[in-house]
Length: 412
Image (cartoon, rainbow, N blue to C red):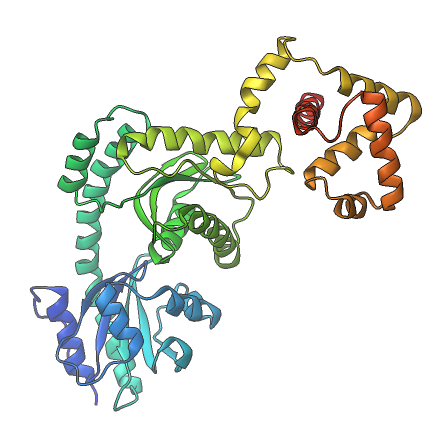
């Protein structure tokens, strides 16, 4: 079928009516999404649809497993670089049937997508041209949605900064603002920070937003940018293991930013997990404290993201201050350091690694690349020279903390 005239010159009251019109012309189900794969319109009265489209309509966004598959197949990459329609073959393990997609462009930026599900017929070359026309015609309607969204976003951003800086602390007032601005609520929340090596650009902001909008691992309530930091208020999907869920998301976010956009060297953290909103500022400060410790002790805290998991590192700022004032002196450490310097040994390092491995002799020996007998001899010498009882957890912990503090001072 050849279309001589522009079939999209008519005025459409809504994007839903526009989607219905495309569906009638192509005789197939249509969905229209924004740049982050959130559903903005879909054609009605379709005789057939596939599981992926059904799930998209129900949740108002494309399922994360479908997006991941489309990235793996190279489909999203093509849509982000081409104005031509892209044919997508069936991906049965995520419930995706044959379809054709085309990007909606504004200048050099993709602002949305139109998807045509091939059911009873395969789209022809002329159909593909019509789909390109539809993408051009959809531009202004999608832009109107973005403009309304951006105005609301400005008010929400200001509100979030008031929460982070403690300018609004009354729980009821915060809840009223949440309701007024239509911000979703959750029984548990935490403040998460992603710190990038360079200041966040507009392009990076889009990439970050894309990952956050398409994830279904956590619920993002609010977000903002502070130079190198992307800060968000987020809720776990379940209340059973929130720290585990946030940890998993931190790793997933960094992996996807690297794989999809080649952005790496991201430091991540999150504060305490709380139930009431007056603790938002506290959670934010705790997330910043985690990043500060990751900066000071990068090796020891590499696998730590949450404030709760910092353990003894929660107290290090206070301890460093006391140590620098000369209030903390460990005679055992001084004796071991003097012995190491005089005899070119490494008893201090041996004890540190021993404690790092929870006093596990085999793991410590393996890490130090020495025999267990050698380790036993060293531990005996540590106890003798440092005059420390290695069966006393209090003495061991004190020595361990002082070693860490001493290392930090030596590096700075």
